[in-house]
Image (cartoon, rainbow, N blue to C red; front, side, top):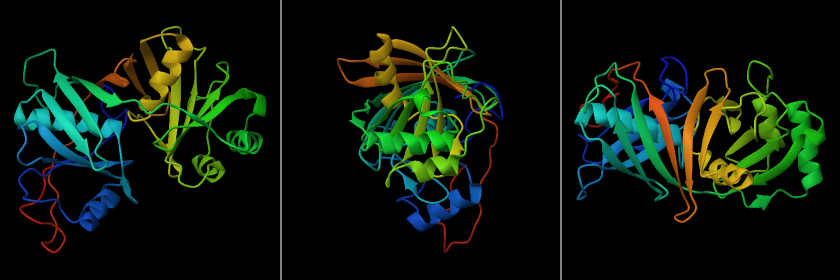
Length: 295
């Protein structure tokens, strides 16, 4: 979610449309472990559907992930470069339907070097549950963050199992100012938690409506998309806004323009993407089928 190479959230995308079926899950997991990014994305054109409809799957180095927003951003960019199409429908393994459209300022079909803008439409996943017992949870998270408990204003969870911790807006939790122990956050979380989302209304930039940092499985996710499913309705309701500017002040950094449609309970994320690497993965036939996926 950036226009600057080697910032944002690096996302390998493997296009498997030349294969008749998915690679074995064990092979996709091995590839994700070898590439060792927060998520590695696999896309394959859905049979008997329109040419712009794709199944999409996401793997961390350790397990398959149900949903990944920056993975959809990267997939839309990669597919635009390989097909010339500008709109895509993605269906996740959980059956979540998402849409993405690609635009470029230079021409209708972007070059490899072009930065593209991608508009993504996701369903909302609002923060609905407060964690109980709240006092014990707040104590654990305050200790993990090195903060006084009073600085944590609210703790909740959504149906994607993201924990959302709203901090006082005067707490500068940017990576430059605050080192956060991702493993300690993981240990403070209830079993089954997908990610820990630190957020506030961010008093340090008048052009920003809210900020966030995101941690998952004991490490930081540098620029995320799926957590907006919780944060856009969360901050939209608090700030009484349908359009918001979001900042992710991690070391690599990210930002997005986000919109909330209360009538359809969906959000739109507008973010930029830039391509940095192109290549092929080569391995034995016992672990890969076909001629090998494009990276």
